[in-house]
Image 1: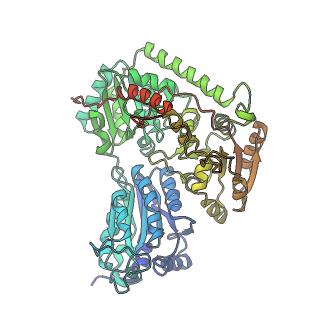
Image 2 (image 1 turned 90 degrees about the horizontal axis):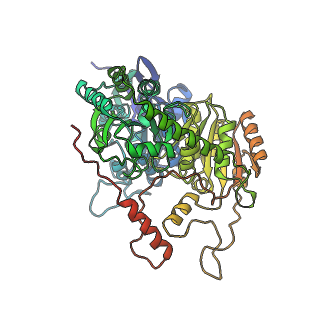
Image 3 (image 1 turned 135 degrees about the horizontal axis):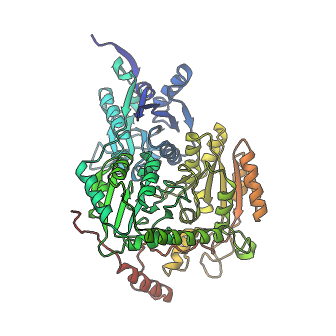
Length: 635
């Protein structure tokens, strides 16, 4: 007779998650660090009770952390998963209704970025005895649809446990997807609130330790051999390194490949840091927010070797970056959906394994020294451009002596330790960081740009620090993103987790303001100003938002600075401190970063009464004519 143990469904979930492990390259790790949660009527008596019971009897099983916003909790979990190369993760619990739907944005971010997080939203009653419930969605055309169905299109796996007997299959499927490098993303398992509290006799085998092997699929021999043939035949190859290089732990393999072949590397946002900034073959950022060096080389490349990249529109400059008439692609990726892009030779395999095999096949092959001299010269010119942005000839060169964003980035870059981590996600800062930040450690750069979600920054910084407690974490956030979501500063205080937040005040949406201006829309609707009684428009005085005072209200140390010297002293003080600090600085939003000599496809009105819009449309049409489909056969 099978031995059983009687637990509620929620208790079974907690017990199961606490004994899951991941393993790669012979190293075994506890899979779930813990569970973030905000309790409401849908989960307080189910998962809430189960987490309390575990905290009292088995405190290391699945530690609980109280968050302040459901979306932010998911961001923190996603940042943690990224910082641990997708080998460790968090679960996140919410109540049904607005608590659950608040997590949908975070789920989309996780799935787009191919990062694992387990979402456990409560759901309506399975028995429908009390329907319609508070916060229940009633539809006249369907009785089985709840607000949680909004998770379906943004989840890598979705399930709903209507009966206790369904739980084991749902949990095992969830683990399968969470630990699959090609299929991972947000995994949503909905738990009806009455089912959470139901008791069931579970086979004890369900709660035995399980180790999930994270695979390193090796490339098929024909594919890697064909890739080697194309590399040997190419005169101007370039590597586009994406986040998959990090997740595979392939940074050393990439460095060895480039050193042996002399092939230069451009890096996507997720791929920044795959080579340190001063590696001889590192050209830095590529694409719409790239360096002039990487983009010049990309423009004339006859072979693009994409390693672990999704080829997003920013990476390809909306398919205008690679202009060689006969350009070919080799795509190395564990995910077939990414490996087939641009009709390239698809190498569906682990990045580290593929780069190692490819380096061996190319033994003795190296690009022409004239090509090396060319990209080295271009890279040196860009380094001089970065230095000028970091250290302008006239310090505080913005209007009225305000610091520029480039100066702020430069000082944080200079004064942080090489192993410190910079975190960002949205606004003008990510593009400037992509161009200007000189990454000195593979884990030193963490910018979420798959979804570029405003409000990720503080929550993401929390997740990075949880994953990397021996590194200082610098959260770079503009006033727009800060106002979207700064709630997890309270969680940082609660848990004693140190992050350093650089809060840049520029009185509006600087990124979209600059984009609006370039598109002929005159920064409309992007400034934080009073509505004028005279004009009826948002063109009055600047709003008196005191974000430093807001940050102080969380119980944090806040340093208000306005000069380069004050800023430098603040960074030093923040690093020396044991707890969190916010550095508040006002910058000039009209002083942008150096131009990348690239493009991003944002359509401009085809007809307009505005001269500015008509002029922008002319420029748009010129760029649009250079877009390519990349449909050339790969063979």
